Amino acid sequence: MTNSIISRRGLLGIFAATAVVAAPVASNAFGILRGAGDIRRIRMYSGRTGETLDTVYWVEGKYIRDALNEINVFMRDWRTNQAVGIDPRTIDIAAASHRLMQTNEPYMMLSGYRSPKTNAMLRAHSSGVARNSLHMRGQAADLRLKSRSVAQIYKAASSCNAGGVGKYSRSNFVHMDCGPVRRWGA
Image 1: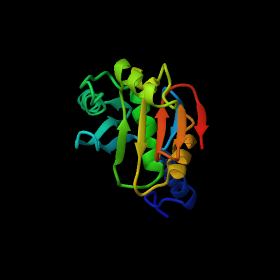
Image 2: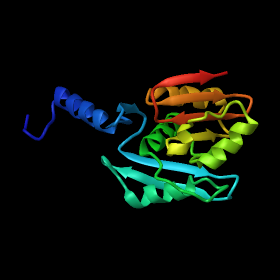
Image 3: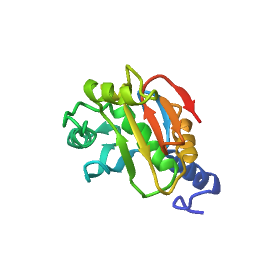
Image 4: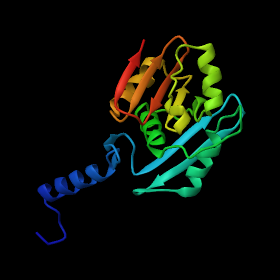
């Protein structure tokens, strides 16, 4: 045998190394965020503004500043037109959940950043709005998909084990945030 022939053990070793590199797992501030990947992309649309977002915001361990700025504007409080820096960890959770569900359908974003004024108005009309909502810090998003149930989205987001996940079945959306790991909803 010549040196150019790879043994079965060598071939299995190459396959194993490739599988580890290609696995949809990447480290970030949460430790291991299952499903995030080495290239992170987020796809959303807003029924409120008619805007769409489809951007790669992370490549090989680095956030792309222009893409994050685009996300900040897209996820602004549409009532006041105020934008803040959206915490990229929230986008990581949404992107990882989306990837785990294996769909190309963009999320419908119901709520991203909320100004204190908007949060107070919503709170006055619903007991489900937190006084100190993480939406007011740019650390939360309320999302839905037509092709997936609330239970499926909730399960995918929960499996990331990287923040808060709330299931709002009657209102047909899932809340995702980068706060402490916790679960709620029916």
